[in-house]
Length: 252
Image (tube, rainbow, N blue to C red; front, side):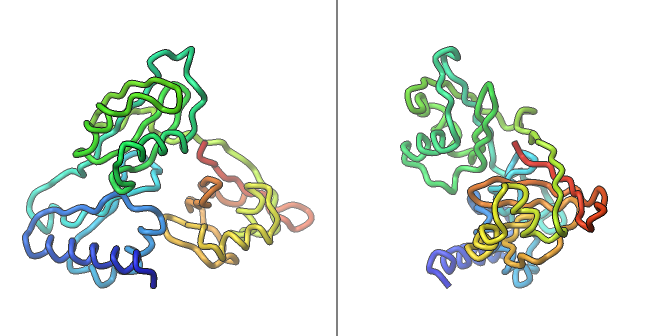
């Protein structure tokens, strides 16, 4: 077990215990899918305290754990999460900025990755999910990304533009195995797909997924680190040659 994983487990255990002992809500920072997998492996031993996960927009990957609930504590407390909308000061001079550009600019501010959730790019703006405590700091100091001058506004509500946008695709595959569909979705060989499983880069419904021969079920959300993610919508029909036509919705 790696040292980072051990430290994460200790932190999660400590937050769960303190929530139970002090009767107050406690939150982790934003966790990556790999970090969420560590948490899921601990869920049974944490069953003595209520907990859930949330990260803001529908379909987001990076999420916080909240320890505590209305039933357990007798009151409600929202997640300490805000949304920063980032727009260019002059649209006609704006560059075509990438996720990496935004993340690099944010890291340049000296903040930790755990205070940031998903970064959602749209044609007119970017939406940065952030902890409440850091949102104003980011909004006040993030004024340039690469050579593009930007301005920021902060809201507690998630703007409608953060809702996922999908690209529907129909794929013909040999079977509904996860590795077969992943390979077809990104036009890679089966060996390339298998390498992603071995490298622990495949996640199904937020959990690390190493069973490449596992069969996907309708509404499964498959994330492939470095490529993207999709929702599996199931089998549409079987072809005369015994293959199957399936439908997926890729997150744009």
